[in-house]
Length: 410
Image (cartoon, rainbow, N blue to C red; front, side, top):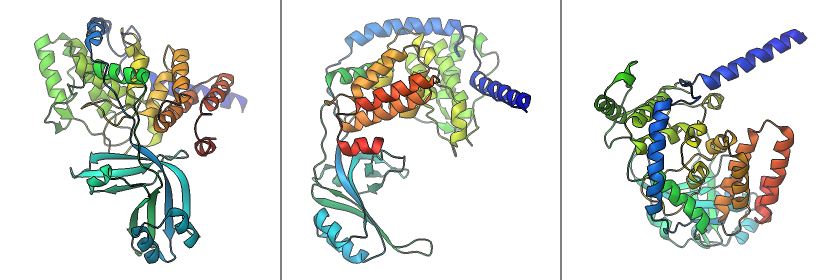
């Protein structure tokens, strides 16, 4: 029995190692880009450091517009009367007394944002940043004027009629205070500016007009002339690969091929966006089960081997801001946490994150996002003693947040 368990463990370990190492071809330097490509990229990065000195870092950034709200939900009862009271802007406490069976959440952190939906319509969304799970309550409206309205002491609700599948329901936000947005402290604005300068937001990874499909990479592409490589790169940039399922590696392979060709043709802007997409696993898929996420590595080391400040870069794309420049790159909080766990500069990353989380000059939304980033980072720590120490540091860093947040986080 003991031998069987040991054998099973060895097989599982072997499968894990294989999954980690076989996702993409690894060159002699231990990276997914060849020595030649890394040499070219390093030269570009050196010149970018000079460019960075000329970037305008005086731009001010502002936090996402946010507030605390009541969330009210009703299934059954006198929903018609409750809806009328909301239309009449009945104060929340009075409403709660009148409808004691309503489900009430107080002090929910709510963020608002404008975007275009799948039908290319302008919409505004009010979304709860749920600190317990990923299922925050939200209301989306085509009335984009709501974004700029003063919603203090007002209700925003959704009513669903009874069907054969569900009961009649009423769900709402009540805003006791205005939405507010404050200036991002200078040291964090610097990181955002650094990421914008390094990524070059004036360029895009894909061309304006793309088609869905797949482009095979010729096996002998390394022997192509620079002109032919550039032509192949343009073909790849004109094609978007949609993953058919969780195990479909097509989108990630396509991004690696774009990155490889970009490195070979000195196209830093396209290279960095492609590599960041790989690191953040930012791809369209028909379905994506969590069981497949572990197989997709972050490849942060490839960036650390270049002469750039990777920590400033990933911090810059982690903050959420109200006034991003066009094409600003937003990183995935979960993936960046994992990437930093594979970093060669873990101590610096930990200190930078904990300092930001504890900074009362930074808005609550960004501090809480970084809290979850660090939590994700720490989940990949193998040393249980170190993991516990990090967790103690993390919870010590949130002492300056309101108690209603702290209670939800513990």
